[in-house]
Length: 92
Image (cartoon, rainbow, N blue to C red; front, side, top):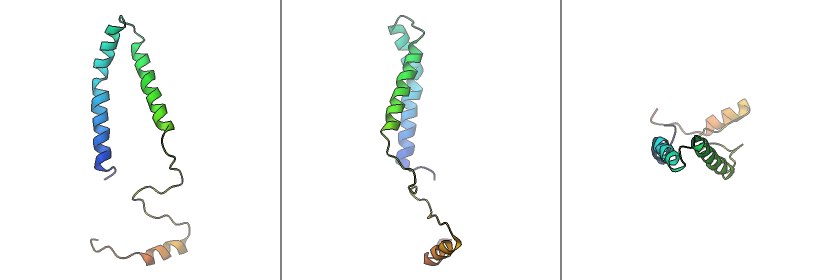
């Protein structure tokens, strides 16, 4: 499994709420602003601004191991030591 359930549910909820209702919102905005053809561009720029702010607020995770990732080794000796320290998995 690639993502945990809370991530999958959050992603699907966001896609259905925002992606599914976008045509309705754009149509309503165009009616509100006298059929201004630039309204979809403004909507897209607003969504991009929200994305940039979200990325700017994210925590940096470079050079950190991913959750659930196996340990990394750089030499054969480290690999052998790691294998020796592991307990056998009875389910395999």
